[in-house]
Length: 599
Image 1 (cartoon, rainbow, N blue to C red):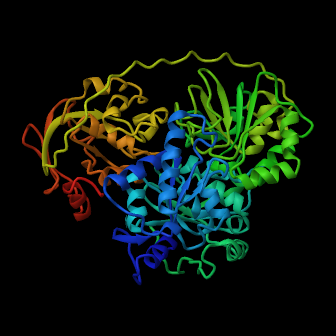
Image 2 (tube, one colour):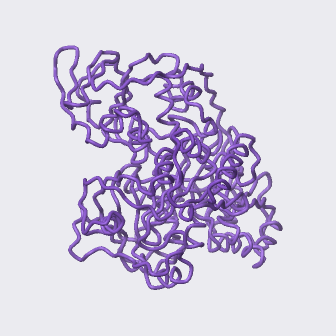
């Protein structure tokens, strides 16, 4: 078996599992953040559920660690009250990023299982643990039952050959891989990374690469734990007698991908698409307005030390804002004790309390119209970190760019550049509110087709993160596709029963349940896609919303034609009588749909 197969088998009390099987997995640590946490509480209370094991259940407030947004503050307080009632540990706004807390406090450890409302919970692959981001229905089920269902994925073996040249950091390697795989090159699979570079990579570097798994469409990216990591967790893990798991020599992989790291360059991702990664030469000289250093990808003490090395005895360029956010409170204290904060402040930086990156709406790092930002985060979807442009880079490139005032690396920090003029602000049209939907559970539906010929429609395009504080489904429909170019008026034009037909990786990105519920609010009949983002697929199934995996987009369907979809038979009947087949629903999907949702 592969690593993920062994962990799933271990937590489902089975000797073995195979790709495609659906099993119930015991979850060692179940986490809700301030984003999603209030909805988890709502689901638990509305369904009269209890907490299976409070000692394995946690809240982490990392999206809005300042408590500066009224709705976030309200949701945090709801979670605190609920936690006090059930004896649940809260890692409050002074603690930092939940996944990093899980690592540093030993809530997760090699071979363990961990779920969170954080779509980057698969960062736990860095220590050989199985972490998954899930929607609030899934997390509520984990809180209440201690288990979640999961479909065993296939695995890909990644072999990194050779060593990168000087100046190429783990973030560059992550972007190097992301450039190759794109947003869906590892869609729905588990990946394992091997090679001399991987074996020698310290925990911080492993975290950086594993945290980009979601951007490649992967379920998770595993690094087999080395002795250093195993020894660390023998001291801090909540379960000291854990046994790390490793893939068998004869493990069955979907394929083996090999990469020559000697060809890796210093990389930067261009705005809007993390996978649009290019060698820095292609963007060097681009004017910079702000720089963000932090996030679950690059907020460790090692990352801050690298930034400080560049910033020492230097000043941030005129009219450039530098924002630095350590990943956890422990990292914050270490940076202060080591004198890094003095370096940062002398350079002119803003230092925030520990928490998520600027890709979380409640954290420092948001930018304004026309603003150009260099960020060490893992996600730069349009509108996610503000209304400007966001380039992704390593901490060294980010720090060098802050000093230079343009995108550059440390070896070219003293170049003189004439800046490009800023782009014009793009405006979006207002959308109207829709009424609360009525639940209907037919196994056969008929509806009008919307053809959306786009791949990788991410959750920020579907339901923008600035609306994430909304918890009432009836208020969500007005924001559906509000950030998808050309479809901003979808809520006004959509009719009850309409069927969306689209391409690959629909729902990529965040774990937000609202990206499903906004279509429920509009009474959309179903979504048919060639493939779905892994978390989005779970969220739709768990909320009882009809989705179908089928490659229909290029089968001659016409915009606006009426089709009939039979979920039970796996058939789509067109107006002309043609019948198209798709893989009928699994018994799990059908059961959840008919009873109105997982809970």
